[in-house]
Amino acid sequence: MKLRKYSAIVFDLGNVLIPFDYTPAINKLNHIENELGNRFSDFYKSNYHFHRDFERGKISESEFVSRMLQIIDHKIDAETFKKYYADIFRLDEAVIALLPVLKKNYKLFLLSNTDPIHQKYGWQKYQFLKYFDELILSHEVHSVKPEEKIYREVEKASGFSSEEHFYIDDIQEYVDAAIRFGWDAVQFVDYQKLVDNLIERNIIK
Image (cartoon, rainbow, N blue to C red; front, side, top):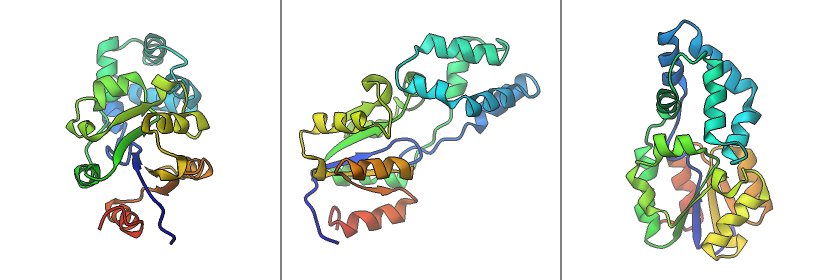
């Protein structure tokens, strides 16, 4: 592989740094009433455009929560729903441990399709965020991956040319988009594969 100059390392958030699973939220709702969590899950999966609009900042937090509470027959209040909905994350400590190593030589950016509830109630508390120079979040920039605008927002923040960005995402479609826009990018599979990708590019030794 021909080595290129990298200045910015860009990480996706969900299922790269913080794996997530909606099962605990579904189980909590099912515990309140049989099939309640399954009803939420079925609606969420079959109406993903609704959540995508929330991630895009196209609909408000109150509008999103109101619709979700309708689906679950208002069996819990809004605050409880937000906590259940956001209590889905865990840390990938091995991947997170790469951040301070990379930070020594590169600018770090977070690029995430995310919504304000997941941010405020879910992952905002994590200490590893301090390693990032800037967070580029879909609901704040009103664009979602794989749209070009959100990738260009990273470039605006970094000040570097497209080819100086290296991107890590678990979704191949978003990786392919980054490459189309001039970045280098890889699909995240697991920690060891990521380390191999970084060594191959001479990003780490």
